[in-house]
Image (tube, rainbow, N blue to C red):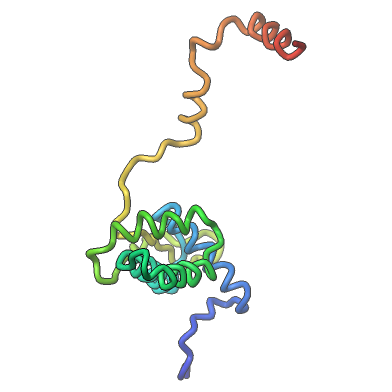
Length: 166
């Protein structure tokens, strides 16, 4: 019987589980949607909701209560190590969820199981997430190389070599 066992072990040691979940929280906040296993998503949901609640508490503090705001930020920094993700959490995600009382993430179960170990897959995402279309890496590269920049291949190589020698 599992009495008094609140921690989901996920078949990992404590240090590995802590690092894995910290990385998953960072990815979820940065991307706002990730695909993982059902069990990891359940654990990730509670931890992410606690992080967002900490960030929301900073919205009520003014400059006079700066120490409490700093304390909340440091508590989040114990788990998250990426400063850009922390800034996004406190400046963007907390503001979007200021009217919501909990339930900041949602889990969708996928019908397909993962190849290899047949684990149940799930999508975990932020409820109040941005729906902007993100450009793929290929489209960004194609914008860099416009058609007007490419002339005759041989002439272009010779010009580049001349510029490199100078």
